[in-house]
Image (cartoon, rainbow, N blue to C red):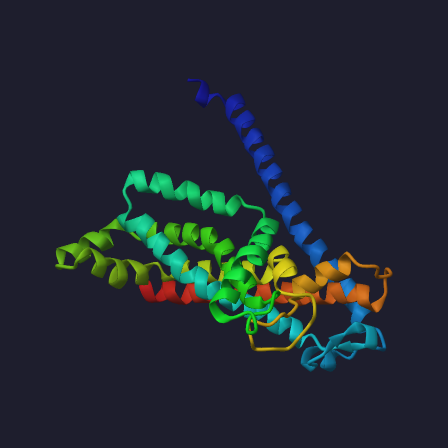
Length: 304
């Protein structure tokens, strides 16, 4: 047979090595891109922190961000970033989780055929459209509910709620995959022990899927932290340290957009500050990813 031909086997191994080499080069290319981004962020951030006007302790603990008067306390920007992201998670996680449970455990094929395209449409809407949706619909809605004297035109609440809608398809899709990956035998065992559908779902399936669900929620949180256009349009353009979500406050990404589009001279301290803040965002998301992996490992070990 041809498969026993030494020439054929040699040629086959040669083709496999070529394919393996190509795949390795693609993997190496993706790694080099990541390394290049980190190098640029660190290099430009060093220029910022090495400036005599910048104090690292003041940067980490300061409550005023006014580069024009050499005040570089980034806590107001960090506070607004986490405020919008937490509001987004308070909306996105419950709705996304229940949508995922319905799709994975209860929905018929016909209903899945309706809901899945709707989620795909939500995921495909440009973020700038979400930004104007927050500004023209969510903010007027909040002002009509809580009063115009309470809710400012630009506020972190409307931005956070719309970001929650933005990450909803991500949460629902990934959570559905995590729930669907639970072995069918666990469901059958729960039914055999007399468990109802809802008891099986919440006492067996969801605990077994906690590994994937925790990773989903942290990934969605990272996505919310990095969102740009919604907060740039709806949250406000002035760094302000406030716990009131109905007040205007500028996030890290909002500040980066504003400075990048302004008349800032190259290599100035204002210009270099956007790379320092970008490095902060990178570190935050990197830590969230590490925590996600650790939590996934813990839950996986408990499940085993």
